[in-house]
Length: 229
Image (cartoon, rainbow, N blue to C red):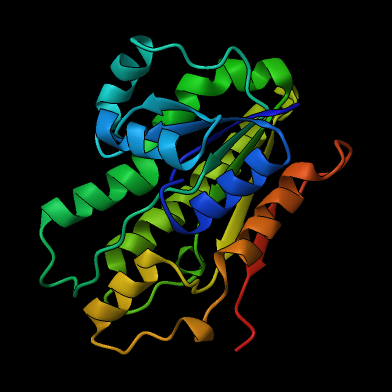
């Protein structure tokens, strides 16, 4: 039985991945931003354990995990949480930039740093669920695109640094997916939302787990998944 820690399990792709891991009998840990969210996740995923730590406050993650009992070893750390706020560069404030970069980039970097001992012990796997915005950013996607470009750089550097320790590092780049975040994006874009036009979160979950389950003699480095419509 493998042990996994998932961020962003509250909805969308993260929830789909968490369900699949639980259904197959793996040991599952879920990161929650606060105690209330931890209770909600525990109720939604019976048998999973929770850790409380806010990715939006990276500097406090060390303190938060130091007052809890993370798993002794991890087979995978799955970074799926993320936030988005659209807007023109000329209109965006530092608050939007700082919040987006904290949750989407600095928080994952710090959480990875804190859990590297457990990952090294098992020669584990770090998966970053990025976005096609991490490959090419468009108008009004500046902060989100910047955070996701940075996340790819984080993954690439981590892969090279930890190869000698046996770690695998994968970046998954999903296109538009039918999630609550996509509903928010369409609202900000002023467009009607039609879930049928986008990928099901389960499809992206399959891509994530394909990378995780790949035999140890191979590694998926970058994987782009797009809707067919």
